[in-house]
Length: 322
Image 1 (cartoon, one colour):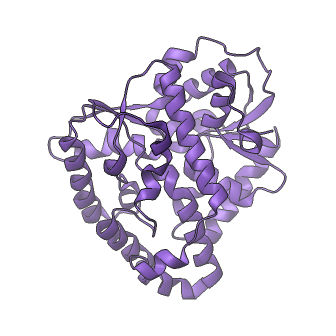
Image 2: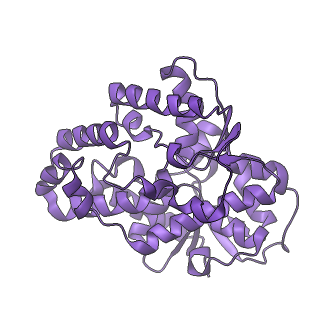
């Protein structure tokens, strides 16, 4: 596969449609419509669309894998309506990520956090452009995102994944003139408000092995907060041999460029996690996507669903590790 074509397609698609892979815009905010979240405020829940894009990224990468060298032709078509017809996400996965985001919103409400939601202005952060070195495209896209946030009067953003948190907190101030919006991650907020209030008996939700995302663990220092929340939710947290700041990659960062290499890295990481448990809790949509792609008998679960079960009594069924 021609990597240059893939990079060019990601930049062109993002600048043309606002998203890095073919996907309808309404897929970003559809999850919030049943909740009736306020539209206006100073503090906004900002998803950056990463969770919502996971089913589309998986479908896109799967097509690239199947096409092999022919994947370059798909990449060149990525910004067209034809590609949008070809890239079809698994409906169950779309429902799952919508459930994760709904759980996060409900957990924030349970913790007493007041916030509004951006709906149509919940734009993709552009983090993949930055990660891949597409600097000029990232700068243009980031300026567009900031203008939308400024129009909405945003003074503080609540982010929900490590990639969006990192790029908004640490990278936007370097690339966007005048950017001064405070950025806080939902796990940081929940840990402050719910982490010291056990919702269930210790270990009552069983044991799970935790996989730390690189950006949370190394760049943002979010290591203790998820563990405190999981324990308060009733989970016995198991540590793999590489955890916390010494965590190991899930393969996600190279997924768009080399799906086969990403798969091999994910398989290696999953073998390490299995040494402790077949129930794996992830904190990042990219980690979830890459590890679940190679899982066989293991259950991969996003932390928001586990916390929803512990604190809200919401049963996510198989998605919550049952």
